[in-house]
Amino acid sequence: MEMKKAQLDLIKKQLETIKERSPFYREKFKDIDLTSIQTQEDFEKLPFTTKDDLRNAYPLGLQAVPDEKVVRIHSSSGTTGTPVIIPYTQQDIDDWAFQFKRCYEMAGITPLDRIHITPGYGMWTAGIGFQLGAELLGAMAIPMGPGNTDKQLQMMMDLGSTVLCATSSYALLLAETIAERGIKDKIKLRKGVIGSERWGEKMRARIADELGVQLYDIYGLTEVYGPGIGITCDEESGIHYWDDFVYFEIVDPITGEVLPDGESGELVITTLRKEGAPLFRFSTHDLTRIIPGECLCGSEFPRIETLVGRTDDMVKVKGVNIFPAQIEEVIQQVPLASSEYQVMIDHLYGKDIMTVFFETAAEGEDRAKAELDLINTFKSKVGITISPKAVALGELPRSEKKSRRIFDNRY
Image 1: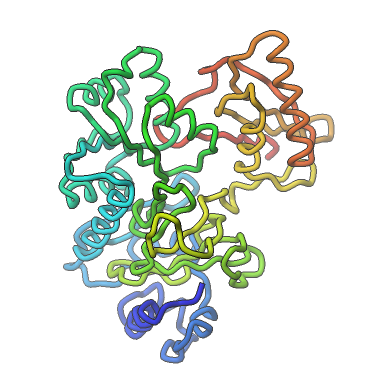
Image 2 (image 1 turned 60 degrees about the vertical axis):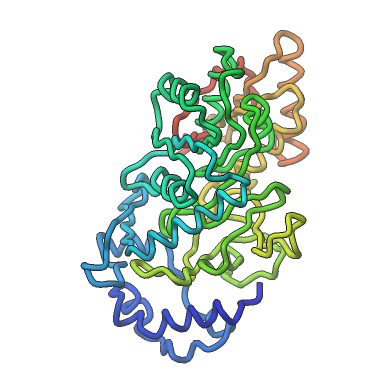
């Protein structure tokens, strides 16, 4: 995508003083004359910023303002190594709230709504981001946080929650519980804002149908404000992102070459206004593409395709690269399969064995037919033979946070 003049001006303004303000970028850009960055082509020669770079800056090496301007910190989960600490100024918090409010408005959410917030609070950016946007919008925020499903449903009924904010895994758990208890007529939800993990069309349809809501994908990551830098619209034709706050590039994950609009690759993000911890060309590992052309919804904000996966989510089985999105596409094409699945990959007797557990309401011969259908569809779409295991609805584990679906036991 061609960089707008306003975006280039904001980037140049950040680069003018970044070496003075940020120990991290002073070291990273020590051999680069930043005054030479005058065009988009110049900018694209800057090195990428990686997650490992950010971990190595622990705890506050990313801070680019004096201590007295830092009003809050957030952190990545750190489940795969040293956490990343991101400092925020008051302006950063205000900008984040503004972007989140914009997300709610894109989803048709108004000050009359009651927003039921189930993502976690604390160092993670999720819950508090949903709350900031709700409060700026003027809607009622119901800050539940995760867990305690009984209390969630009680509050949902008693307070008349109209918007559910959740991970797709927890939204499904709530939907299934509401159906089991026969209380759908007591639930007033009309919208669902779902984030934090990718989800397939079959799962989306189940949640929307069982809750009776319209669903929206919200996008964000801890390193770049948090959730709220983009969201789907009523057309469900990609995620609109706020290009007055963030600049998106799509690059080849192997060569780093910037790809033209419409081609799939790794999303790279540059913050345009962030004060506490500005980022230049941050490699997200998220796989997507910029969708050319205008959206039928009328918004002028550009779009990326709903994420198909992450470069670090890929597994290689029998010489074939496989992403979760491919597995979800196969599941979707098996009529008797429900949305939930789990994959176990083992190396036995000198070869890889990929077992795909999937839920189904079918029994007896129909269950066997579903397994055979999965084998054939997986072979034709992905190119390998798997071992299918059909299980009853609700048998696979549910999560109040993100669901782990692929277990690679070979290493």
